[in-house]
Length: 383
Ligand code: A3P
Ligand code: MG
Ligand code: MG
Image 1 (tube, rainbow, N blue to C red):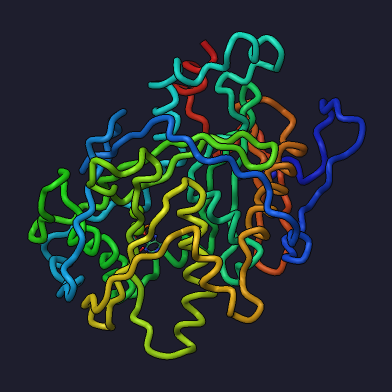
Image 2: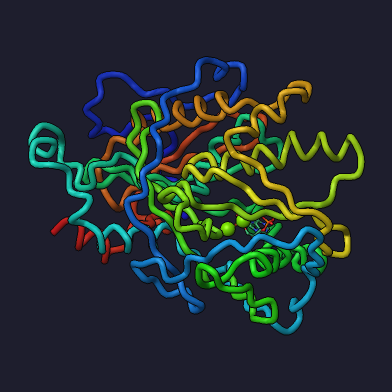
């Protein structure tokens, strides 16, 4: 991978003055009023089957089944013999979202008037990305361990953002302990204990856990002045016919170590609830069902968290995270990206990078392995 240009603007850039080179992640800078965040609208969904094949429908959507009062879920069951693990060495980038866009182009075209009055933003949105990438942006002002790399390409006015695995993340992935690898299975096993394939169905506790399978919602929303389209994996929905429409019927499932001491409770509030809140707030998922498990992977309690009440729950923690800081930082980052990413070219990647205790910076890459918009997409969306 070559770095042919570092920072600054390209010679062809028409901007009269240079955009800023870096963006600060200091929390204090983002402590102001909560920015506009439009109620997310589900504009579609897609499914990935047990071989990770794309379908433009909800076939993989699952239905929540409330556990008994004293469930006896053993999350270790099936790890050895009923587990098909997705190959996380395969980088899918944003390909599934691009497939969804091509399959739903008619729904996305901006209206005649909007198309006539503004540059040809084929999609009527300014940013296309995964929800998970936005979650990382939201938590950045509070993150002290893991940095990130985000590749951004401008095509027909739309900014596509796709994460690049950091060297540290690759190392971590390739050197996980046997215990850690098993614990990564526990979250999926909990999903199997609490989900059915049909409304009114029963969980298939003896079945295979296959982490290739996924159901993803595609939502449109606006953060401050930024019009966003993103997709996120959804664990299940409320099975009741009277449940609100998507995305407000969706539920996020989580597992966490049982809380036995005040210190553990404080850490749970400060670190885990931040990630849980950011992930579910973005697509408008209203509830998070948490299975608390012991060290042997046995679920000892199940609790429901309302996403909108999490920030109240943590207010007693000293120097705790604030939703407004998360959202204002994300909004500022997207503004930064808009000013930096000027060249509209599928072969050019602006790579934004951040490490804890540093500022966000970027580099520019032309015709390199960082390019992530596939030819099949560029060809089809340009025609
Ligand atoms: P838990 O959330 O119970 O930990 P998600 O909660 O986002 O739906 O993800 C489902 C499960 O995938 C997680 O369950 C966890 O087991 C696994 N998982 C997700 N992200 C992970 C990560 N970065 N590292 C390890 N495991 C992860
Ligand atoms: Mg999930
Ligand atoms: Mg989950």
